[in-house]
Amino acid sequence: MRALTWHGKHDVRVDTVPDPEIINPRDAIIRITSTAICGSDLHLYDGYIPTMKAGDILGHEFMGEVVETGARSTLKKGQRVVVPFVIACGSCYFCGKHQYSACDNSNPADNQDISEELWGHPASGLFGYSHMTGGYPGGQAEYVRVPFSDVGPIVIPDGIDDEKVLFLSDILPTGWMAAENADIEPGDTVAVWGCGPVGLFAVQSAFLMGAARVIAIDHFPNRLALAKKFGAEILNYEDSKVYDALMEMTGGIGPDAVIDAVGLESHGLFADNVLDQIKATAFLGTERPHVLRQAIIACRKGGRVSVPGVYGGFVDKFPMGAFMEKGLTMKTGQTHVQHYLPGLLNAIVEGKIDTTFLISHRMALEDAPHGYDIFKNKQDEVTKVVLKPGLAKAA
Amino acid sequence: MTETTTTAGSGGRDDAPRSAARSAEPTADQKARGETALTAITLTINRTPADVYAFWRNFANLAPAMENVASIAVKDDRTSHWIVNAPGGGTVEWDAIVTEDVPGALIAWSSAEGADISNSGRVEFRDAGERGTFVSATIAYDPPAGIIGKLVAKLTQKEPAIQQRRDLRRIKQLLETGEIATSSPPNPAPKA
Picture 1 (cartoon, helix red, strand yellow):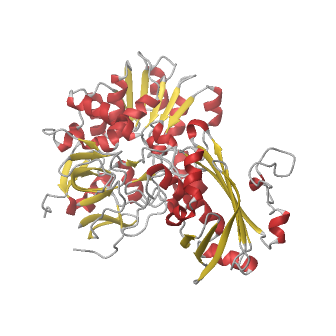
Picture 2 (tube, chains in turn blue, orange; picture 1 turned 60 degrees about the vertical axis):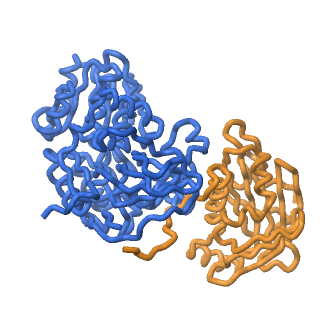
Picture 3 (cartoon, helix red, strand yellow; picture 1 turned 30 degrees about the horizontal axis):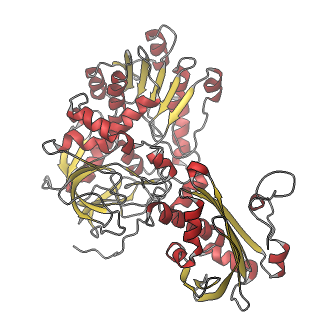
């Protein structure tokens, strides 16, 4: 089959690779009909995530048709399903508590060592996201093997387009959980750093959870315009001082909750960020956490910090003093996708949440390397790239 | 043989298990058998102690989860024959004899006379309520070729402490999910 494979920093190619096969009884094979490039794929593209190997198939946002099932899969051939990017067994203690992204069993035993050493506990398995999270081939391909297929995939009713439901795989539940982790109370003001897909879904979710005001922060005019469309007030950090603006807009109180939807590669020419970037390039520190620092400094006393943005290593100059002295609470984590799927699918069907506005580009799987390039380098106009394995290659 | 390696204090000054001691020492019994290396690990398995014990007591069940084990043949109620792939190629073999057996709580074994590698171990099952069972496995062994053999094993990723942790995770996967999680394709050759 054809698949998008990683070969190094800024080097992804569409190769011919072995077809996936059923290995375990709970597996299923899915023929991909739509798959998206995620902002966190750019962390792989930019070489920030360790334990990648040449030839790894990327992609963790995908959906398609069930074409083969193992003996213990509950799926049926021909069903259309969206597959969560988090692989979860459904039977460990954590899955029992609906903390699916903490699943004990989905990461193969040999692959658990790295994260156990680095983080104190092994990470769960994820599709297409390095060997420390399992080394599972991803879904930017014609076919994918889905382990524990009786737990993750959600069956999509007939008559609902791929593009309405594709983002259930990651960014919609991730934006929703970001807002949920902000413990929003009716009347709250919520500030969201990053108007990428997760940030934009967090904006929508925050309003649905009762926020009176959402302030969205970015520097891409088109992305800020999308946030404004959903009712957010917007801040362009190239034009305005973010802390000063937030204090002025909240009467000096600060936002009740802050959401870092940027993660480890935050942009901006700030003194601390330039230093971080030099360190990251030299592999001394690993993260560029300017947004996280700014969010904590801006958050009101006793407020909440929600971090859906991806971090993998260590953060330098974390403002622990501000965090402690102001009495803040932080919640974060990879998304417990399986937990949110039924409710969010309903919200889509009932028209409470729109996801299709996000898609700016649709292209053939064969054009995926171009998709990575423009998603990375033209972020203002390229808000989301959806790959269709069925489409013919352009030019 | 009755000294527990997982619930006794590490040096008498705290409540830490002996396996967490800064310098864990095999018991006098184990030393007498030449078993100078010790590995120990505890994991929680989301099944009852009775279930985990019953699975473990039939040693043949363990073979698919243990990467270096070529085969485990149960000979009688107390004896099983183990064939294990050795670091650097070849195999080593021994008969393991069950020396203690407390249903739902404890299994201990040691290798019989003539073992290629003298070893003994015990696995304890403790009720962890809604979390399932704390499973503590301790193995003492006579490291092949002493410290050099241990280094070679580490280099070839067959270091017993790492192997034991991985093996126990796979046993947990089998007991909790009915299968062993893997991302390795069975057929590495491209089809088309």
